[in-house]
Image (cartoon, rainbow, N blue to C red; front, top):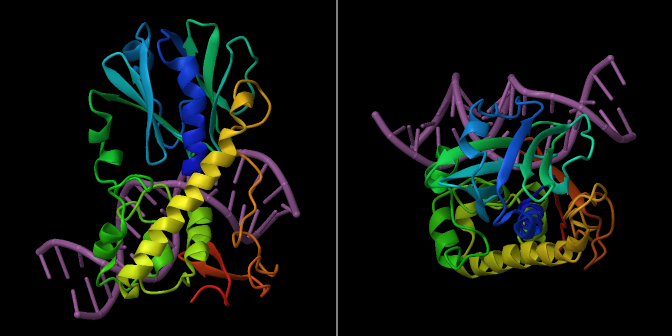
Length: 271
DNA sequence: CGCCAGGCCTGCACGC
DNA sequence: TGCGTGCAGGCCTGGC
């Protein structure tokens, strides 16, 4: 399940293979992703040169010619660079074929991902226009989080996963960040003090940065057919550890459901 | 066989 | 009004 760190690792892996390359063609094997791939996508990008590969939230932004390819990996997607003659598997839905003999190939068994096109400013795309700040940017700070949460009765875990609060914090890192910050996931967002907002912002930054750093070490394996980028072994503190002893205090980690999503927390360390 | 996981958009009902 | 909120549904496949 690509969360922000996996998307960032993917971006870094793509940069050296894509930037400066001309798009030879595109191959669409199955256009029925979350939103269908536009039929005229090829006409728009074939022959253009990739200028840059950026990221906003969990969207990859590939600057091509005068527009942008916007790629989302959904929950089961990956985008990897392969020699373009590599036989396509059942879930290989899209290839961006480059003049280097390599292709960026989107594999996505569950097809929750998306490949979209936006002329000019990609941030003006409706999906990107109203997003909160990046978690690793200076704009996301205790002041912002504090202001965004005042008066809100919803649980902090739910609020953290709302892309109007901060982007890129998915289900796993929401639990992990709250563990690091020592905050109980059901706490009403509006009741969290300024000091604890500061702690939570730091926890989110540390959690995501550590995951990116861990994934960065796998980057040399980015090209190839084995090993998805960023799917590094993580030693989670809370996520998926129901009943297992807390790594800090030893008390069993408890599961919880919030808005049909699994949450994990330590009843001792998180209050 | 049924259920669950995941991201995230969309729509609904409700209360203030 | 219009918003915040909590629901549920949808998309899809693989794994248990």
